[in-house]
Image (cartoon, rainbow, N blue to C red; front, side, top):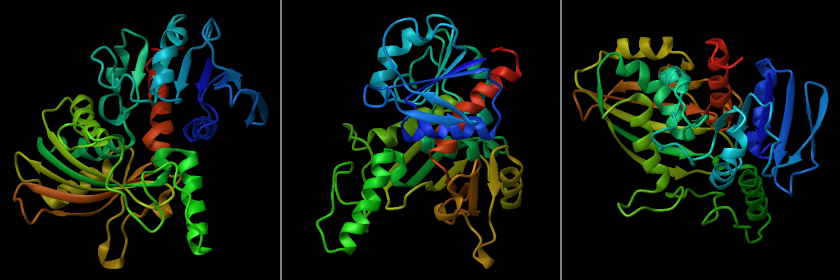
Length: 336
C-alpha cells in the first residue's frame, strides 16, 4: 500500500501524519507533496524521515494507492487528473468536488457505501461543521425523520489553518502588551471578539460556509431536511462547537434520543448538567469522537430536540474522517 499526502505542511496535512500513525494505517510506502514553499521540508513518520516533494504535473502518482489531498480547492482541481490517472483513490479535503454529482461525499458513520461508487476516482471529505453534525443526526434520523435543522456554530481559529491559530495567539499577546493587533487571516481582530462571518456571503444572505451545511447534509444523509445555519468565528484555538435544534416528523422520547446518541459510532454522550458535565472545546482538542451534551426537548417545538456538540475540526472534521474513509475501502476489499 502506497500512500501520498498532498499539502503535507499544512495543519491538516500534519494531522494526517499523526492520525495515520495513531491508527497504525496499513502502508508500505509514504510520499509527501507540497508547494514550492514547502518542498524540501522534512517530517518524521514512525521514526523515519520524509522530505516533501514539489507537487507538479506528471507521473509522480504512479503506483500510489490512496492520496489524501488538503492543499485547497484550486490545487485539487488542477492536479486531480495527475493524481487519479494511474488508479489512485483521491480523498480530497477541499470544497472542490463536494457537490459534484459524480463525486461521493462521505462520512463513514453515515454513508460509507457511497465511497464505492466514484467514477472519477475522487471521494470528497465534507466541511468540518457538517461532519460533526451529521454523525449525531444519523442515529436520531433512525428514530424519526428529521425535517428541519437549525444550527449555530462556534468555530475556532483552527478552521482557518495553522497561520490563523498563530495569529490568534499573537493578537492576544499584542492586545495584552497594549499594541495594535495584527489582522491578516480574519476580517477583524478575533482576540476578545466573535465574527459572525465565515467565508464569503452569497446572494441569499447566507455565507458559503452556511450553505455548505445546507447542501452537504442533504447529500450525505440522502435527505430532504432543510438546514439553516449561522456560522460564527470565536476566539478559541482548536475544536468547533455547535448548538443544534432539530424538528422531526414524530416526537422523539428524550431518553431514547440520549440512548441513540450514546450508542452511535464516533459519538460520546457527555451530558450531566447537574454536575456541570458537558462538552467544551478547551478539553476536547485532539479527541477522535464528537461529544454531545445539553440534550433536551425543544420548548418551542413539540417535535423538537436541541443539543450541544463539540468536535476537533482538524481531526474528525478533516484528517480522521478521510483516513476512516480509506480504512473502510481497505476493510471491504475495494482498495488492496
